[in-house]
Image (cartoon, rainbow, N blue to C red; front, side, top):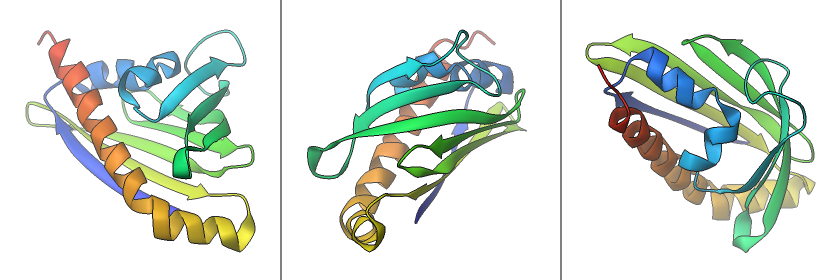
Length: 150
């Protein structure tokens, strides 16, 4: 298991940040590791939305990740479970702060391949994931602040 917890201040309202974060189809705009994203049902947000992501994995290997939105509390919390071969969750929490929003991202990933998967992720891939997720938060911040109107 790999756990990564990050946080960033965004100069935009929780409503604005939420509108970008909770629109699953827009994730490739700010998540740099996504190669493709396919929604499995009508609609692109909300609890019970299921989707499949192909992302860049360790050593350039493409990883298919089946996901489901299991929690969607408007402008507060958004949780996605990894339900395919990759297991775990992504939990985004929004909190209003002076002049904007504090966005926290808690990611836990359990990779397939048993002990070998754990070893590969912990030794070779955790740092890369942390850098990628940090870059993703900055991209979301820029997107929210660029389109923020007040």
